[in-house]
Amino acid sequence: MSAMVRRVLEAVAADDKVVERVVDAARGNSPEVALLPAEENRRHIAFLLSEGIAHLERGGSPDDGDFSAALSLGSDRAAQGVSMAGLLRGVHAGRTELIRASVELVRSLEVDDGTILDFMIDLDHYVGAVERHIISG
Image 1 (cartoon, rainbow, N blue to C red):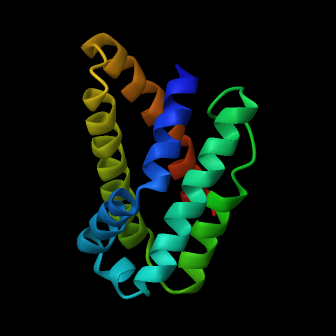
Image 2 (cartoon, rainbow, N blue to C red):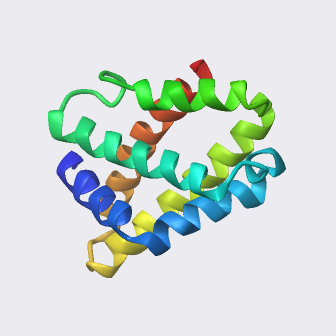
Image 3 (cartoon, one colour):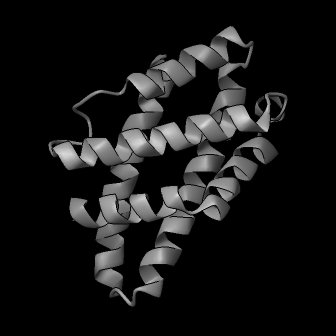
């Protein structure tokens, strides 16, 4: 299943419209995140996606590996004065939009519902690990 998650994340990361949806969701749900330049949000989301793809290529548990990008995002936002609540509102909204876009893509490939459910669980597990590292940062 991780191979499918990786392929979908690669497609999502390469789609500027989807990345923009994730950025818009984060900015639209967190006034504090929206105060930052949109390009900064785009850069972090693109970097987190590329790190996620690299993590999946290496294999292993979603909780193991290098989460320095997520830690950096958390510490950068703290240094910029973004509160934990504001950061979490943006992260949760971005996470939801990423999962929504990913499921739309998988459905367009006519994948059966059982596989989509397994895909969502795998993707959510990885995105949850990223979120925990952002908070730690």
